[in-house]
Length: 496
Image 1 (cartoon, rainbow, N blue to C red):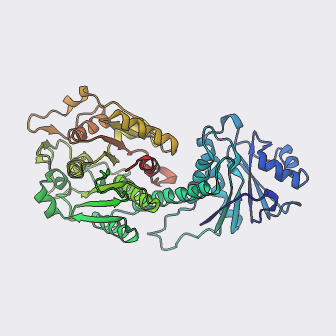
Image 2: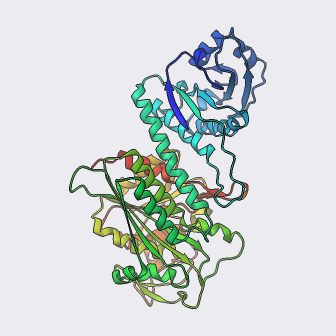
Image 3: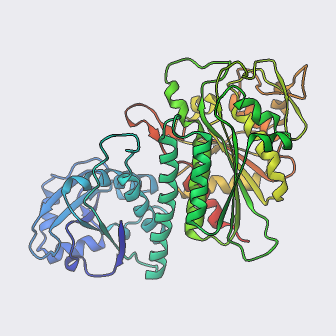
């Protein structure tokens, strides 16, 4: 998609479709009123007729209006002015973007950026507009014999918001494009079936990303190399599978300072999770291909970071394995030794994500990180608690937690903090090892984070459980690409 910023008078904009926002069902914004005057109040007359639907995102298409250069005008209901916040703006955009491909247009221009959207500024409006357009145009067809029809829309114009320069608006376009590229990378990897997106395939995609961006270097460790490092916990997960586990390390160097410490992202990459010997029920087991969405979001974030050329250093660590039952599979009651030296009693082989993450977190120590964030589809408890609305957040550093919470609000990719209190730690006690891999039927998301916290005492760390937010079930089944938006927002704030 080609995007452009324009400060031309609305009536003089040459486009196949001019998108005009409407508030309170009949109120035009400043640019809309200028447009209305140019067409002899034609827009006002239509709005007084009540033909525009009441719901946020409702549209009304008008054609060949005298005094307006654009071939079509699409009125977009943005809801009540007093209730117009980031969520409603996004809701209106999502509805609009679904309709645009049905109009057989090659170009569109958005007059949305003079809306007052809560405390959001013009840069946010431009970036979010681009993000939602790119989100709406994504379509999965990798494993379909008939490929998705490419939309005819090729060019999008966006009116320059008041209060920001053209250069700032262009930066916002690039930001929106970069975040969208990362989100769609994560969605594509998450949507691929487990027989294609294996640990080896995931490693290959990370290598390809490194060939596309000179700032990224990718290294992949084999099982033999992990054995030498003592990663018995990670390797216990892949023991029953014919697919070899991989530890993928991607290093992005954007800082010009020689000793700038990196921020580290750790993504759970279980490319298919049967539960192992603790076999899952058959219902919806196909969705277990999404158990690598933490890894996918890390790959997507690295894509965005490299595209934006952020002036910081970032390391991505992706432990990837397939969790299968088999003659060599780890059994409930087995005790394994992690890279840290801690022994782990595996009471349930379906609590495997934490087993691969703990060794990756120990590996992260060698980078002397400024911060570490792990992202994982970790627990059903997070799904039961939050559904698909927010990601669960736990951290050993409150300042880091609060910054991530703010990033989630800013990016409309929200998280909610749960307590990481010492009172929960005894639930992980074991009679036969240093720690058990589950804490019982209660507080599952919290005890999973408590387990990981045992391996994060040497750095600032936060954990995002995206088991609910990483994908949609039902009719809209598919990966969401979250929390790429949150992570890019966080990394964009950092300085070398």
